[in-house]
Amino acid sequence: SMATVTTLPGVEAPVHAAAPKAPRRPGDVLVLVGEVGPAFETARTLAASLRIPTERVRVVSHAPVAGLAEEQRVSDVLEARLAGAQLAMERTPGIVVVDAPLALVADANGCDWVDDVVAALDPTAVWAVVDATRRHEDLVRWLGVLPQLEALAVHGVAVTSDPEAVHHLGVPVSLVDG
Image (tube, rainbow, N blue to C red; front, top):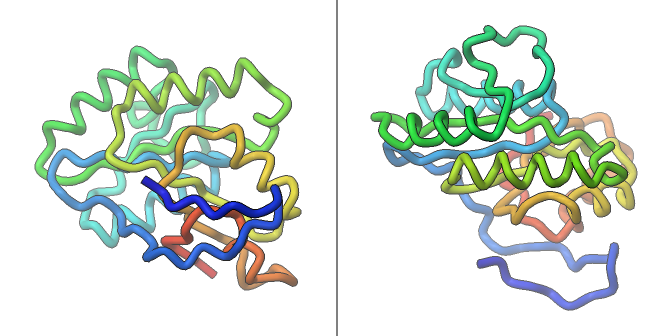
């Protein structure tokens, strides 16, 4: 359970809780929600560090994804439930990307779909993949419509004018890549 810090919305105190590490036990399932391209890149980075073959990463998306073999793609809630059950029986942890673009803030059906898919996967942990160059207010709104999150994986820190801002989103930062 996450420690809650009572502050005004959008001006979260920095979260200095020890950031969680990626789940690493056999059968653990880490779900990464976010824009599908960067989230898939993050999944590949994490897979390499956990010694999971890249071709074992799954992506839940309505549409085909560049660089992703079609057999790695999961397209609906039922397939997500099957994929989650399969990953739970593996000898390694599993990583599943769920396509959850920033446009979800204006898409109630999309939010329901993401919630249903994540629940169907029965994950050990859920992280959001965050673009540090996006406006803080937009990220706060987006994180607010996502399922319960354990951590953030952040990209774009090297090119943002405010690299500290991601530490004020109210969720611990577990991974920063450039």
